[in-house]
Length: 614
Image 1 (cartoon, helix red, strand yellow):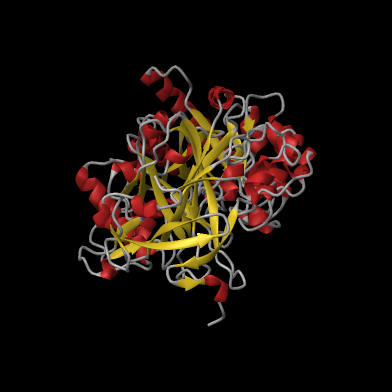
Image 2 (image 1 turned 120 degrees about the horizontal axis):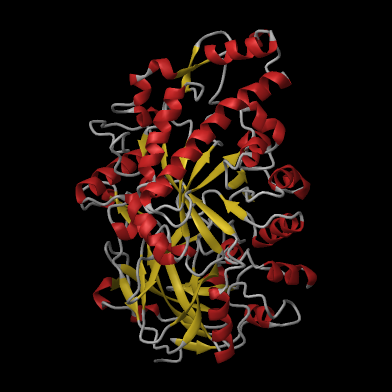
């Protein structure tokens, strides 16, 4: 191997991160906790097969371009959004355990809606994982390589397989037939582990006390983004949680009667007969489901089985209010929808008008939903989760509810303020009754199937006692009656606002902690917004841990638009259950957690020191 291909060095960034003066020696953020100098493998043109590489842009080929930095030089591989580059293998020539990081070139002027992505796996392993680097701002006419930490693994006898994430948008072979993300890989960084470090890593992975994180996956985004057609592509959405602090995956099994598995009761999102969609992504989703159905690949079963292989629990999540959608999302309504067949199940507003939602006030609606969840319980799931954070309300002014309140309180609730405390409290009885029926059904399934563990019930709820009451949700009653095992407040902000900095004041979680105190119910606040800095993530987690929280939840966790993307935030998130690391980092002055970067001075025949606008 040439010297340019294999470079052992410690850059300024690596020196900073290896220093015990700046960070606790027990902090394994990325590859910083390891003591040995890294080796940079920089000549990616050594990938095979060589026929898959080209010095000039060519479809179905990686472009190989020489580059240089202050620290090293090499040859990077590049592919554009319509390249459809093939898989290639890079020989690592490594023995023993190493921390593996990847150097990528995110360009500040990526096409709109695109970000740099790579697929990686080792030979002899399972599915790919996807590394997604967020778009970078204009860097003042400087071009930088950014480092992404991937994994710690025994590399003996193994090589690296590199792929471009690409999906077909049509059956043809012209450029418009492929939808890909820009992919540029400049180097592979290997940091050898000492024997003591290997023992520390394996011991840490075997410990369960830090596995306190729960991930959510909507099970819609991957089909819409990548038009999934294989089991391996579904497994790819689960794989990032291996050897992390995540212990549960909450995978959405359905919304209303539109189910993300081969249901015999509801519908699947194949939308047969529908030719035109409001968004291209929705066509991809439909075509993905049609192909998977024809191939006999049930996404829910594939995901549940792979979660077992990864070593985490699998909880099926259900959007309780997703029976009907407005344009341009009304493709969700296509087919033999129960909403169209059962108009008498629709809610009633204050003026007596039918609403575009089903009301759980009706026993028939509750029974229908429970029949779907019984069907879900036939899969290898550890529990189910009710998602009360989308398209509420579920309880309004249905006649039997109005009459019941009039009998109990002697007044028509429609003459009261809509936030009258007695009326709001009375309405909560509907969903509490639903949870009684749900608990009875899941306990019956547990017994009937001979399960050794009870099927658990989780619920994602609103920000506070007051807001939950507005939606007819009473977490305290559910906990007191043993109707919920895990309580997940979506945010500390009202209206399920996903952009607000949730839990900036950790005292906002006190209501939920007090509700669960003395019970077996777990409280797992959801961390929002989705994209934050690793430092921000650690600070918010520290505040919640100090407030008494033991578990954390992460909505929309996987995929390029999610959190499990192998960028800096994921390096913090994958170990966010390690309270001692977080406290050590805070005690050490909260040092910067940004990954190493290397400024490029040349790329191809261009001297980047002469970069100018335009």
